[in-house]
Length: 551
Image: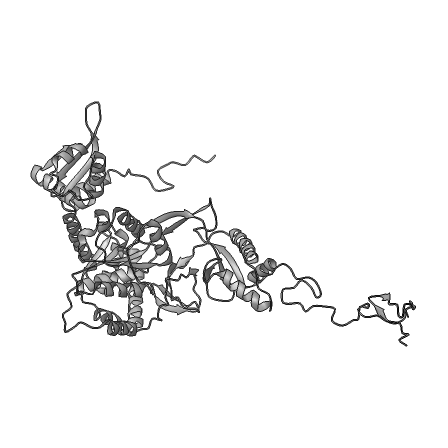
């Protein structure tokens, strides 16, 4: 019994202790090319049918290159831009970056397989190298300038729509003509609509007079012009004037955010993180401003540069350059230092009586209802400004000259008087800032009594009466006194006190002398003539030189 031949794995199996010859003509199992189930199914991205899958990192890179192009921003950060999607730059790493998107797509494309952290890290390194092969491109935040000069405002929606404003009007486009990036501090902007009463609806929400409101409208319009400095708007008023709510509205019109109001940053690094993620932001309830923050805010108004360590490196650095739109709320304008006081637009808010006070819920609902109409009206004003701005010329240029030109353009198109009101308000702000600085007030009192005073910085400290309670910013030595006088020079000039530190003592020590004097009555014409002499007459390019004779 059981005298049968069986074959296993190509060899003869003995039966009952005796080996039997194998019938070689019988086809064994799994020995011919025609057997079933000898190939694994190949998922998308495999190299060939029946072949081995490429490494996960290689498949991730191939998947990314099929769907994205890679660019390097001017500040040295790599981004990915979808080939078939909105013109939005996605960071390669970080939360909601390309890395997470590719990890999810990999899991969908290869069921039962998940990309490892090392594979994702390797693929990001390769994609960063691809981005570095291209010339840096500008990557804008909320606002950008198109190649034809039009201003583009990102609506922040998932479909990538934007508002394009030019000298002939504004329109909504499905795909932005400039590249934008997004951040977690941004919120979508409602689609603007045409409504002739948009500005009136905004004024109805604010407790300010007509002059202040017109300056506010001009500031809001200028906030969307990306390549000029923007003065920090400061809402001033006593408690109960709705300063914080008004500033929040201003920011949410220009650059909506779930956190429009921020507390004062604790250091420069914290500030740079906030500024990198928002085009416009508000510092709420400012009572005192430390010197480092005052300097930082000044640089943010006119253009700041921060050198920081490059991401995921130990020795490489990137330079972040930006201008920002700032709003602040305060009770006392004396908290502003002299150089910062020259870069603000101060708006006084009136006290709201109990009959006109509304709940915050009601105010938010009303603001959301009128915001599309307000945006449409503001874009109308911006289009008018762009039409006349190239031809605007000012007789005299104040400190914030570019913003002053925008004010002049608003006045020309709207029939308002914002430029004169702004200059008058700026002079008042300078006076208020002076009154908040005891050292500056002591210098002004000294010049008022002496007429003209000259001496070293150390002698100035001896000449000024020291307060009974010396404030923290009172100079402790001659070096600090000299620096403080230089910083206060613009404020002192605004009240008629001139500062000159170009002379030296005639003894062998050659000490630097400070000359403090009253400004002459015809100071403007005299200073203009003096300034003109600083610039030599230069012939235009291609003129002023006789070309050699042609032989």
